[in-house]
Image (cartoon, rainbow, N blue to C red):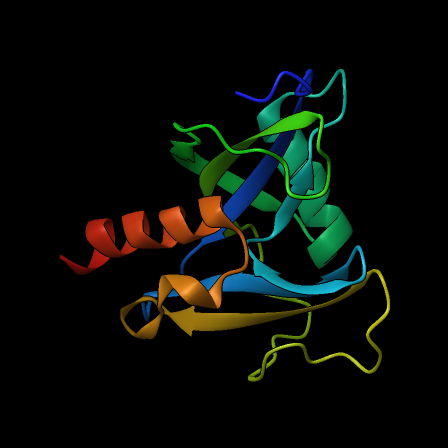
Amino acid sequence: MDKNINRYIIRVYAIILNADKEVLISDEFQMNMKMTKFPGGGMHFGEGPVDCLKREAVEEFGQEIKILEHFYTTDFFQQAQFYNDAQLLSIYYLAEFTSPVKFKISGKPFDFKHEENGAQSFRWIKLENTHENELTFPIDKNVIALLKDKYLR
């Protein structure tokens, strides 16, 4: 392990599946790069993982979600991509919307006008047609494989 790593970054994500075995993903432009990931974000001090995810849902979707159950927590070492001194720990929950979707769901990746930090769009992807490499980050790639194992086999 790198001796320069001296802190954790904890991120919490929602896995939202619909009746067609599609999962909701977020296409974003953050930190000057395009990324495809699960919706969610960083946990703040004084916040639990479930509270974090509920806050993130309101921030990202503009509506509330219900947490159904824990799905996965990172079980391998992952250095944070954007911070050389941090280890990343990601927590994933199965969730559902508490009311019908009120935000735009796109049919195409990166459906925003300008590539500027904070740009975001959402889309459904079919689990059966999704390859791990469609997601940007290593832990998300692992989670897609786990979802396919659970829901398609």
